[in-house]
Length: 339
Image (cartoon, rainbow, N blue to C red; front, side):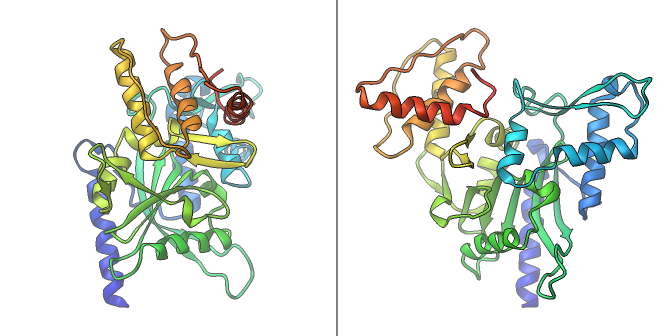
């Protein structure tokens, strides 16, 4: 067992080295190992990004506790709804303790400035999560690798060595969820990545993870990306990792769940975006049952972020698809910032 542990630690180190090298923009924070330290880091970033709003008066301890209480959500879905924000920005209105100071409209996350502006990208590992109950079976846990954007843990990676099936990492995450370890600030996680180094897949965060929702990454050459470092390069680098959260995540209001788009859906959206900027036209061919409505919804919402585009038109070839499509669009749009 000790040998396997060393190998897993080496995999973890190699992954972090890959994420933090050259232009990847992730910065390793070895000093963040506990939940209170994560919150302290979040508040430091919040203050740094909102000096004007705060009039250079730091947040009081009471104000921090108020913010923490008000933004912490009971589960992954509610946290994702909060992070949907408005106009691609997540803000929080704060009434200051000092009545002589005006209220502050604090910017928490700015998805209009991906890979720039106020965005801060950090990676932590082996964060300690303490017992959540008095049960003698409950244990302290350490999480493998987590990616923070502006101090919030949004992507979590669970590693196993090639000696074990990658599904062991999947089962490990579900076990931690069942133990209520993914609570508090970790409820902001929207994407899980599970890997044994040679098989890597991702899945949207949820209370009950289903193996059939695991997704393999397919590159532009239609090759499956299994190696965890290749996956990190394709999906977890900046700006792609931030886009996964900001642009390729949809909230299903009816099912109360987070949906992460599949690679072919993301590539379709990227292709349309690229060609539309050139004034070109074309078509995307997707098979039956591949999520064409979800793809088209995301195409619409992403195109509408281009200032010169005021409206998109959705044409349907059969009346029976009309209600189905409208219902789906309304479900996805309930928590969206695009009209």
